[in-house]
Length: 122
Image (cartoon, rainbow, N blue to C red; front, side):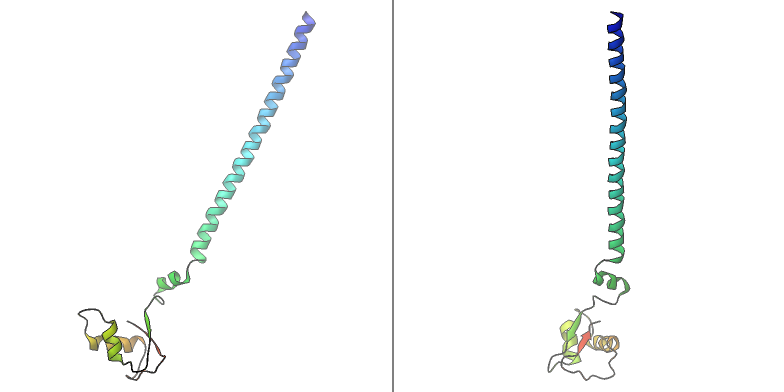
């Protein structure tokens, strides 16, 4: 009977060692998966930041420096500074002051407009 006990103990001991080894290798696999997941998450965050800082909408970038998103109007036949000002000025705004700003913004030296000309509205 002593021999049977040794065989059983040996088998149990071998089983316990194999179980511990399997558990360690499973832990290593879990850690590797967790590390890969964290690396992928970090990469996504970095790419998102890069795209938002450097690959955003050009209009939004232009708006930051104030050069775009301004309204424009194309001069039609018969348009005058007065007619354009009357059409686009806000309520209570003086027409003469709007015309002055319209000329200043567009660097106009005279009141002469040409059909097809693009004017930036103040």
